[in-house]
Length: 150
Image 1 (cartoon, rainbow, N blue to C red):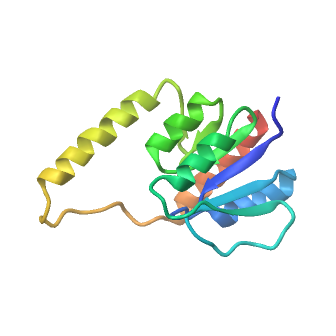
Image 2 (image 1 turned 90 degrees about the horizontal axis):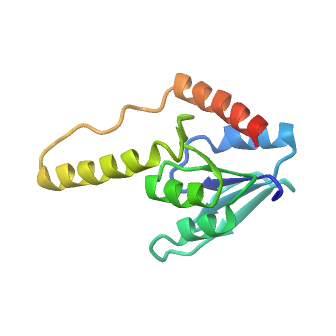
Image 3 (image 1 turned 180 degrees about the horizontal axis):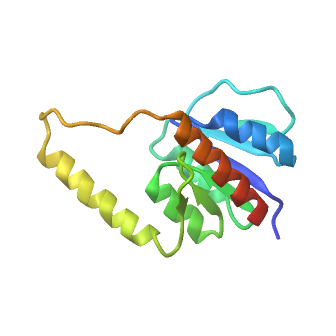
């Protein structure tokens, strides 16, 4: 079994602080991956990986490094699919698990939504609701559960 590791798709992740706190408690290393430098705690468990600005560079770094024993935090459905195929556990920032049983439907839904958005280009449509304290709490609970199962 590979050593445990938490990978964060860092550019738009609103729960980095929750991940760091959990990593400290469980003594699990974290790789924060982003296109360019992101502020992060100076701690031996936290490593910042700057993947560069090439398309999907951060996703490639995460997908190539994640596998058995890894927990990946991302909202990117296509990255989640890649990591699941390598044996990683994957959560989104709201604590919802991506699974082998659900990822196909999620990829299909993503494609449909992209087509719908393209058809509505130029029209004012609502976005996601703001990230709440309840979302943060749900993520923290799911993170603890996922780490115990690794």
